[in-house]
Length: 337
Length: 197
Image 1: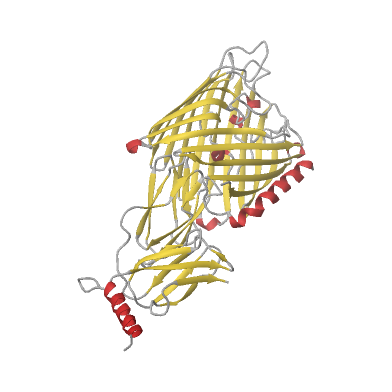
Image 2 (image 1 turned 90 degrees about the vertical axis):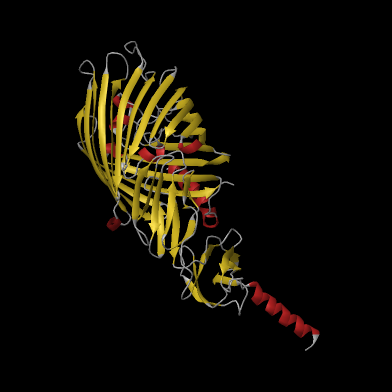
């Protein structure tokens, strides 16, 4: 209940100046307040995100995001991996980026704290235009790549608009329950686009987030991601394979359809199929499948509600076969200066 | 005729001559105006003039609606019907650009940083522009059948350049309000004020 009060207060304070502050400013702030409920373990969550972004100098962009979130059941997968549900304010991303575009080429240098450039990784892209849960391959509890993994370091992107290569070097700066062991992380990603297609190939080499006498070696994943969009229909997906540590293998994928056609008005329909397989000595292996149908409905300016129906199977059987998730989000923007 | 009368005639002649080019065609002047809503100045109001037999053509040079720092810039863009607008992604993330409601309907898909896509606004009307990835990104493109148009600045001021002096029907638009319309002639008033009460 305290969380709800905090969320409501934040939204009220931020809404007041919005009416007279609609033009573009060098720095824009954005607040989003979300609450949700799921039939999975009767979970309820409340979250607030504060973001600041814009230009802080010639061709120098800044992006910062802090989040506070709490859940009635932190062990539940409902709404999981969207934010760390630690009931405290945490800095998620904070980085500056300089972009150069010499003669049709593209070079960007980023420094600070940011999500690893692996797959469909950007916060605004993966979270969650109609989906209330991250893909199974983005949960650390599935021995895969958590959305809460963050890098503290530098990244360089170079190429031309239709073909770029990005690399990042850093140390883990994870938020949430699963923190990787200290060490040097490297991520390499190539991305190409042609017409309505965008395809990416990523590789990450980092430290495991598990500790124990049985955990040896490095975490290493390779992934392929593909997007296609035309006339309001977006298809996208990721496939990853690798090892969370020596002697184990995790392979998984998801495919999304996001449909927002003219006749649908404020409704965006979404569907996802996905699976993840963590292979190790039985009975410690894990296999999950999930299908999601849902919708995001824009209720009014800044207000949206999302509904997801999920069917899930697999072991360990820690959740119901069918779940209903409902979420409401209010977001508002205002210039800082 | 007294001195004041002579001065007035000379001033009128000078004004007429200043609007007449060597080729005999009438030269335009810059129409300055103000947009207001209630008792305060209004930015991002669009004002345009219409009349029969207006000069043809579209604006020279590139017209662009930029994507930077999770925003469209400018938020309100007015173009002449038939103009092609560039939508470059000058941000650090992927963007999508679409217009589904009114005016020109299109979806440019998702495209990467540094890429450029175009749309020709071939019919007059208001197009509401959004990004399907970033719900807080929005802009308006207003296509008008006239070479005489402007958008008001932060202080509510606007300037319509090179207007040929004659009578016009003016139109004024702002987001979320009724369109204003009326008649305006430089013979009646040297400036134009559009006022949503």
